[in-house]
Image 1: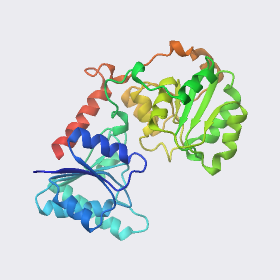
Image 2: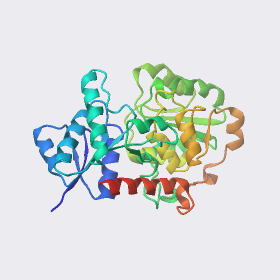
Image 3: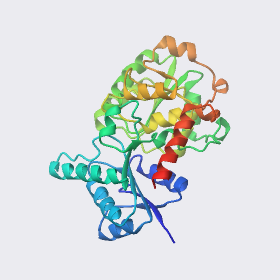
Image 4: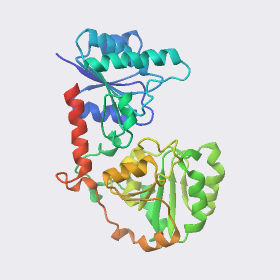
Length: 334
């Protein structure tokens, strides 16, 4: 019986959700772990193989597996997060070999690497990838999700009670300086009468002082690992989702931003950043700055919160079209 596999090297970050989503949608068995001799044999033997994802530390092994599979007449796909996915700064010779092998294999159609960044936004990626797909974080939630089906948790209920009718701004995930945490803490002093800020995720040591600033302003700081259910519940009560990262962090797509798009929440992004341009491409609402006047004009009671998803009309929606096209690319290339 033919067996297809989707492989990730570890479950950190986006990888586990990518693996599980692609496993379900493409009917592939999910495998996780470093590529030792036993794993290599299993991957080479697979009828279909998708690496989700490859990066600097894993690219060489993925391409080497793809080369062997190509010699056996098999196809291999990979998803990458950035244009320099093959480049390991500590192994420049290996990086050059990886890129050379990729170009040879790509020409045969036996090994293809898909960027999660549309070429329309970064055309230079066409030089180091085969094609692009829309980041899965922008379209991996079930289509039937509505306001009533979103979970409520103790954290989301506590957030609504603490907001007392003010706008709710959520910062989700690990708090560090690259994600604009200091800017958010500084902002808290100016908007506290109009908004409640919720920081949900582990706080890095460099941001401890900022977290204390938020607490002193009677904002909510959950300095711990947040469950998926809690995260989704916070999207359900949020008015704004903080994605005002510095350009190093917002130079590629973001899972937090992706959920904001899928769940119809306005994202806060830096003007001119990749996320800003992506929002424009997807026709998703964003703001570049939060101030008291804006928050005051957009404040409503929890019972009046609207829930809108760009995918509510899949026949006319750009995001839905791009998501469908992305899945078609993967399916046909396998």
